Structures are given as C-alpha cells and as structure tokens.
Figure (cartoon, rainbow, N blue to C red):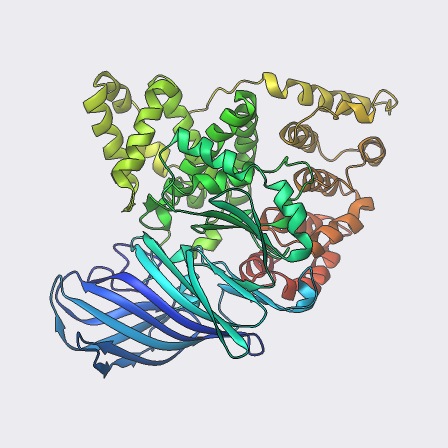
Length: 616
C-alpha cells in the first residue's frame, strides 16, 4: 500500500501480520528452499482480500485455517507484477473479515534462483571446500524472495521456523535456536524469535559451521578452519555489548552471536537479531576493524527495536546507529576515535553526494522512493547525514549531558514500533518541552525542511576536533610537496607505524584529493609503506583507490585479487568504477566482472552491473 510504504505491494492498510512460521527444506542440488509459510494475520479494517509481497517465488497453494484446524483453499492471483517490487500475491478470503478479526493463512511455495535474498555457494566457494553453503540477505526488500510476506518495515512480526538441512550441515537464524532432531539423512533445526522484527531481519544461514564461546551470551560462528582467527578477532564482543548497554538501555535479545560469512557477503555487517552477519574483510589480525561490530551491536536498539516505518526514513535506522557506534567507540577508545570517525564520515558523505550529484533527490535525508528500488538509493547518506544531524543536535542543545537522557528516552518510547521522521521530530519537541522548555525555542530555530528534504550536504556544518588528524594530514602534505622534486628519502615505514586505521585512511584520502599523483610518487609510497599487501582491508582499499584515481596500473593485480576474494560492496563497487574509469582498465573491469559475476551476491552483482553500464 503506497500510502504507508511506497516499496510494498501489500494491502498494509487492510491487514497486518502478527507471526510467521516457516517450515522449509533446503535443497542444495536444485538451489531452492521449499515448504510452507504460515502467517498469523489480523484485519485492520473490513476486507475480503489479503495482498502479500513476493519476488520470483513459485506459489503452489494457499489455505486459510479456521479455529478448528479446517483448511479452506484460497484463490491465488499473481497477475500483478511490478518491475521493481515483484509480484503481488492476491488471496481472496472465503468470507469478509472485520477490523480486529484474526486468521491464519498457510502458503506452500518454493524459491527460485532469480530471487535476490538467497545466495547458494558451491563447496569451492567456501573456505573448507567440502560442503555447500547458503546465506540470506533480506535488507532492503528481498525477504519477499525468501517467503511471501508483508515485506515492509512498517509491519513487525515474531517468527518461528523449522529448517531441514542435509547432514552434517548446521542451520542458524536471526532467532534463538530451540531444538534440533534427526530425520534420516537430514537434521531439522527449530528456532523462535519472540521479539517482533520487520521482515528484512529474518535471516538464515546453512553450512559447515562451528562455534567458539566468548561469554555466556556471546559466541562467534564460522567455518571450522577459520574459527580460531575469528574468535580472537572478535574476543571483545561482550565488552562492546556492555558498553552499548551502559550508553543506551539493557540488551533485550537474549543472545548476541556473530557469524563470519564467506567473502561474497555484500556488506560489512548485517544486524540480524541474535546473529549478526559480518564480512571476513574485518579479519585484520589486530582487532583494528571492530568498529563495525559496535555499529551492528548498536542496531540492537536503533533499527531492530526502533524501526523506520519505510525505506524513505532509513536514516532513523542508520543515522542513529552510526551516531551510537561513534559514542560507543569513544567510550572504548577515547573521544579522538569518535572525532576521526566523524571526519571520515564527512568525507564519505561528500563522496556519495558527488557520486549521485549534489542536486540529486537521493541525497536528501528523507528521499522520495516511489517507484525506486531502495537498493539503488543505498549510500552513506542516511548513515552520515543522519549521524551529522544527531551530532549537531547534541552540540546545539548543550552536549551529551543534555542529549543522552533524551536519547535513552527516545529508545524507550518507541521500542517495538515502526516510526517515521515526523514521529521522531514530534517526540524530540515533546521531550524537551517536558524536561527543558528553553530548548524548544532552539529547536524552533532549526530549518527542518532543509535538513530533511534538501539534497546535497547538510545545511549546517559540524565543527570537529581536528587535532587527531593533524599528523596524518601533515604527512600527506609532505608527500604532495615531495612529489614536486622527487625528494622521497625523507620518508620511512615509521611514519605510519603509530597511526590508527582511521588516521591511515585519512592520510590516503587526503592524498587522493590531490590525485592524479605522479607514477614515481605512487611507486615511492608503495616502496615505503608496502600498502598493496596490507592485511587491513580499509587501508588496502584506500591505497588501491588512490592508485586507480591516478591511473597507476602497477596495482592492477592487487585490485583484481581484492575483487576476486571478497564481494563487500563498500570496496567492490568503487574498485570496479575506478578501474573502469582508467584508460587501460575499462575492458579489464568488464571482463573481470563477467568472470566473477557468479561469485558475488545477487545484490552486489546487480549494482556492479549497473555501475559498469551493463544492464539492458
């Protein structure tokens, strides 16, 4: 229903889903899930029709089940197809239901290979090379290709599942595991998620998985060969979680487990409740990239507990989470770390604005997405522009002592609900009207329409502490100056030995601002710091991006290697775009993508295809 969610075909104004039970079997040979989805529904107002979202599903049958368990077959109409939003599954009920009436629908279905949510991996695509693997990624509108549902964040459901997988594989979900049982040459794993969540947070992984306990409520999962390294890298999970609880409110989800996926996972992390998915690119060997874990943990409050009503208000998920992440990092590593993260975020935001165009409506904090695939609007804008606004408000209203109590009250007020930007703003005003009325006058002076609806950079800049970045900016300036007369003997590996990851990224980003650099300068940088083989992916990516912006093709093998061994869109999309922009790299970029397309997750593959102009 477009009035509630422009990216859903469901009749959200007529009915809502309360609970979903999935009973599915995984078929690795056919690369499908098949089984049933049982939806416990409630009418909002009088209707005789239920409309659900689907994409590339085979709907075999649908029945409504009455209180005695009797099944009545429903007429199924799948003739309404939207080129972006998939197929509407129209179910005609045997009799009219009135507002408040509850009913249960069971749909037998099967997924297909065209769906965007599920990636099946062959044994060769895994680290162990012995067993197949699958994982799902439902954000933003891909749950509808995993099971028929009201695929809108405006609807929050509890869910349970029975998942049948071939032995000796293990299934995990974004829920609490309740039991497992043998069934011939298969195992059936059962799960329950009692806290209501939007459909995009339903997640499944099946593979040869092992677990390492971190604390009573935290564990790391991965393929067995990688488990020791993963457990060491993320040993501080419990500390980060406790820090988040101290900052915000108590953690309510029971367990916080973390799953390290194969390299094709398209994001840094995905905040699936009880089981965060993360990319193996975080395995830096020095715990230097665990900011991503702080981000995903923060989602346990912003996004998972308090959820944006639709994708136009995505900043309520990601802006708040980025803001929380930086405050968690500050408590763990000092305020300098927060300031550096804010500065990098500002640069990332500027890059997104340049990519889309400063007048692009997709750079507004609250963009209009009617007819638009939310994947196409995905950028750092909701993250960094949203966090920028919240940092601005914190400083403008009197600092953390004033803003943090509001922050906690906001989470408490809206937990379990889906809200939009108006809900957020209204509560901001009502909170301060009750707690500090003088602040309301300050809020009235803010140009809210510009903050929410104007494209481009935020209407007001933030003043960050520049002291933590001075040393890395100074080093970059020395290199730019040295490039004029090739005086490179002054530099040594010790220049960056004490730099944090963020400082090294800022150093390389500042050099990129001066691109193109001379070939001899880039060769000297590589000779001095050995960045091409750097294990830390943030640093290596920043170096390769700088080199490609300068058409320095000596790094091309390292670029192809990075594109071949991971599919994280943060790295993969820019590297393809930059390689494609090099005079000698255009054909190589296309050929490399065509060779590796099957390795990438469907979401990543579609976006790179678009970036390279290969879509029909």
